Amino acid sequence: MNLLALLTASLLGISLVSEAFGQAAPTTVPPPAQQTAQGSPVSPSPPARGRASWQEGDRCVQDNKEDFRHELKSGEHPVGPEILPATYFLPAGGPVELGVNEPFNPSVHYFGYLERSDNAAQKLLPRGAITAKRVPDDYSLVKKGILDKGDTLLTLQIPDSIGSFWQSATLYLWVCENPGRPKSVSELTMPVSSSVYCSAAVWTSILILYVGAALATSGVRKAHWYRYLHPV
Image 1 (cartoon, rainbow, N blue to C red):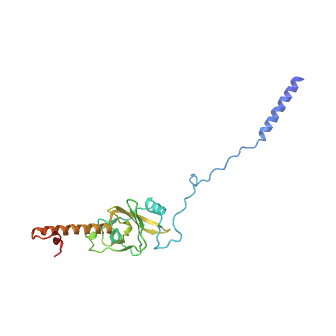
Image 2 (tube, rainbow, N blue to C red; image 1 turned 120 degrees about the vertical axis):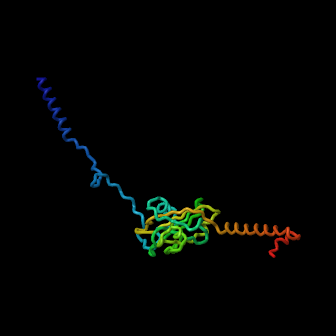
Image 3 (cartoon, rainbow, N blue to C red; image 1 turned 90 degrees about the vertical axis):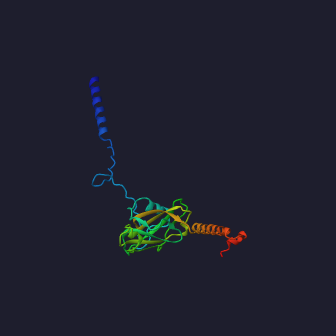
């Protein structure tokens, strides 16, 4: 009798345990991440740069360091056509001519930004500071075979603020396209002069030559030293 009761109790316990496991809540499996047709996870796209209000002829790089870094120095845009100078330096406070080895297009607007190598001066050239025309057939760079006939010749007005005692400056040159970003960026690094330093050097040289010429006449006739400085 005791053995029968023990077996009955054991079967009842096993039945209750099995029923408890069968009624347990199933484990929740998180839904799979959204995937593309190729099976790779979808990542959010970065916000598109550009300016919705941009129109042809407008400047597409603004006058702030963030835009200079992103649009001109980051390498995001293709390298533009080569800039070919006709001089050995950029004259601060005056115009300079630069050739561009691409055919002249009167509808293209060029924009520029200058930055001195010591980072002491930067300047985003205003609209109209760069003019373009078809390079003349008798231009020096055409005669040397550096530019082709029909290429573009730019004239830039270099601001006085870029001037220095023969520091170098980098010119960034570009044209804009939809949606208001540079189509390509060209670079040219050259020494930049200053009208103040150049004028001082010229007048100092003239004074030295004049005093030297005056002293050279001292052996011709005897007179007081200041008479030798007389222009006559």
